[in-house]
Length: 289
Image (cartoon, rainbow, N blue to C red; front, side):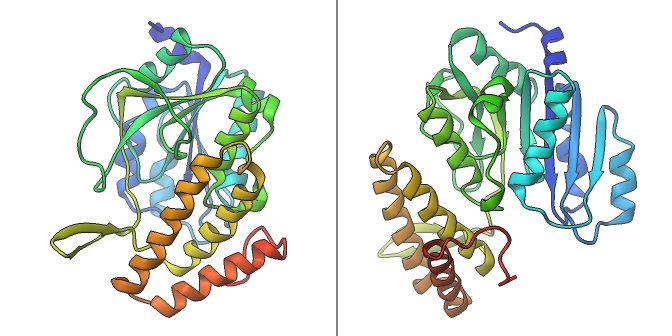
C-alpha cells in the first residue's frame, strides 16, 4: 500500500470554464490529497469574487488565462508545471467532479500492484451510473474520462502531450489510445470513487423503457463529431472493437437528438459541420462558437 508521504509525488490540475460557486466545494474534496494543485481557468470573463476565494485555497496556484484555449492546452500547462516541480504523478479533475476520501491514495495503490501503468482512474458515479461497484478490485480498461485520473508523468513525457488541436472532447480518449499503443495500460480502481456530472441529462421513455440523453449544446456536438472521427481514423486498426461500438453509440446519440432533444436542426447542423471539418483537416477552436 502506498504510504501517505508519497502524496508528495502528486500534483493536481483542475480546468475551469465559467464555474459556479460549487467548484469551491469540489476543489476542497481533493486539494489536500495532492501536494500542489494547479487551477487553470479558461474563462473569458472570470467571476472576480469567486477567483479571490479560489486564490485563498491552500496548496493551490491559480492560473487565469482570460481566454478559452481548450481542455487539452490547459491540461498541458498543468502537466508542464508538475514535471518542472519534480512530481511523478498528475491528478486531473473536472470542475464539476467531487473526490471521495483517500481517492488519490487508492489510485496510487494501482502503481504498487501493476507495471506499465499509464493512468490509474477512479470509478465515476453520476446520474447515468448511480450504482457503486460490487467489488473494490482493480481492472484494466480501454479508455477513461479526464476527471479522476492519476497520470504517470514519465509515461506522459514519453508518449507526448495532450493534442491541442482537438481543443475539447475525445482529448482523453486519444491520450488513452496513444498510451496503450506505446505499451502502457489503463486501470480503474473500484475502491476509488469519483462523483461526476455528465451534461444536462434528459430522461424519457419509449415502449416502456427508460432512456437518458446527455443533451449536449450544439457546439459540443461539433467537437465530439469532428474529434471522434479524427481519433477513429488514427486508431481504428489497432482498437477496432472499441470504434465499432463507438459508431453505434454515435448513431444512438443522433436518434435521441431527433426523437427527444431540443434545437434538433442546430445540433444536426453542428454534427455535419464537425464531420466536414474533420474531412477538411480543420482543427483547433471552431469559428462556429
